[in-house]
Image (cartoon, rainbow, N blue to C red; front, side, top):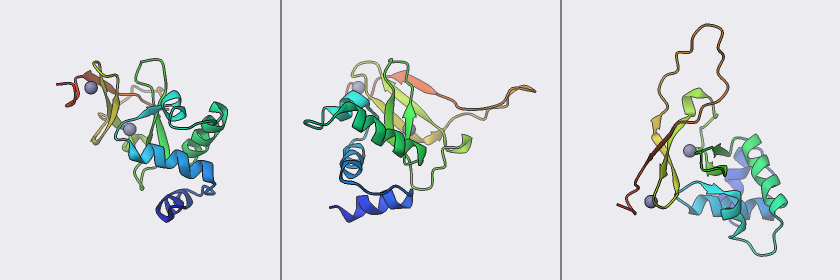
Length: 136
Ligand SMILES: [Zn+2]
Ligand SMILES: [Zn+2]
């Protein structure tokens, strides 16, 4: 098994099982965020709930983040190694309206949220829509 993948999982306190390594590899090979169905399509004979549980473990341990891009299916993408999924780590996501692919814009943090008094922050989805370089 891939030592690199192993280490990436261990860094997030995730026990590197074969299934977890495979799902991690699928996510790391893609430049875009993937939905559960897209990840499932990379496997033969793997139960969707197994993949979902794996993603849940990854998300609970901040290895990946989920993206709600408004298309109706939640997508998943790897976090940077030092990501803590706090407000400061959140970035803009770009949804291409032509191919439907969603990309992490990791160099673009979400705008500073100066919420009015008594409103407390929990999470934010900042999605920009447009055309990606492939569809231009
Ligand atoms: Zn596109
Ligand atoms: Zn992202």
